[in-house]
Length: 229
Image 1: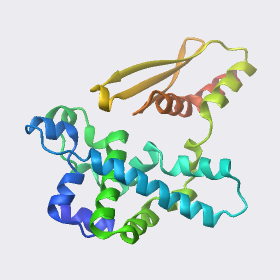
Image 2 (image 1 turned 45 degrees about the horizontal axis):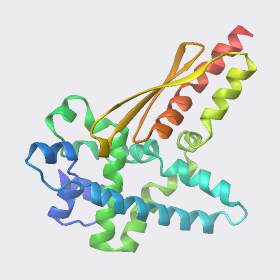
Image 3 (image 1 turned 180 degrees about the vertical axis):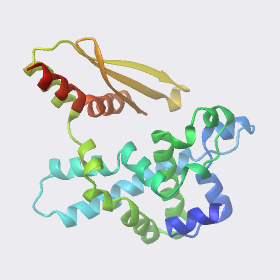
């Protein structure tokens, strides 16, 4: 099964490195404290950022820093990386604890995105920068042409607030909840406008969860406002 994954990725990872990249903390905890993929995730995030930044700098010479930052934010977002993970079937290979398995952890955006970063980090360590660059260019850079992914990078919270203000709707609220240990907290934000729920977002930070909730609820809010006009 893992051989199929490496073929999809187009890389050659040793069995131990691949297993580490796929080891979620929930599985490691249940197995008595095995090493997790979190250090590889940390490394992979940095490698991903520099490869994407380098590409954007060269590919869009007429765009300023803020425009480039928005593009980068979109294609390295949790939603974007989870989209990549699903496209190559990463979820079925992730080693998860029983609790995460029962709650559909193999298809959670946060877990898929973190695992993709860990796989990029593992590729960088075992095969070097060029191999990691090839992986990112095969699967992440093409997201620049994905309207769905690029739309996520917009300032959805501001857009929601502007829509609510235009229709004199108040208040705009983001109701937050969280789960998991302090070092790996997962936040859920629910967008309410005038006490009506419009969207939900989940992420590893409050800010990102709120942004995704705004993105999720924007179209429905617009529709309601148009119908009441």
